[in-house]
Amino acid sequence: MKLPSNFDDLIQEAEGLELYHKLVAQLNKDLLYANIDLEFKDDILPTSLNMLLHETILHLINSKFSDYLNLLYIVDVPEATIKSLDGSDVYVLSQQVAFIILQREWQKVWYKAQYS
Image (spheres, rainbow, N blue to C red):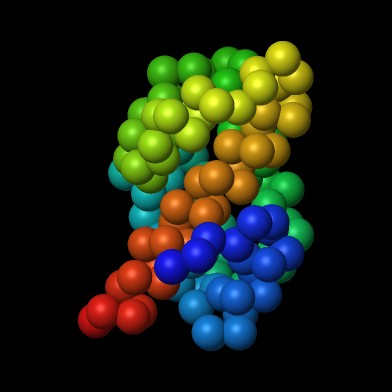
C-alpha cells in the first residue's frame, strides 16, 4: 500500500473507495481509547475534520502533552516518524502530526477493507 502524500489525496482515495465514513469512525474509536474529548460526526466535511483534528493536536501539544503522547501510542504512529519532524514551529508540527494520524488511521481502514 502506498500512503497518500497529502491530505487531499488521502480524502480523495478514501471517498473514491467509499471508506471516508469508516476513516472517521476509526479516528473516533482511537480518540475515545486515548480519552480525548472529541468525536466527529459521521458526515463531517473533510476540511472540518482536518481543521478540528489539527486544533486538537495543537492544544494537546501545548497543554496536555502526556495525552498527546498517549494518542500517538493508541493510533500507533511510529516514533521515528514523529522524531523526524521539525519541532521548531508548534503550529506546523501539529499540522504534520494531524496528517500523520490520518495517514495511520487510513492504513487501518484500508487494510480492514482489503482483507476482511
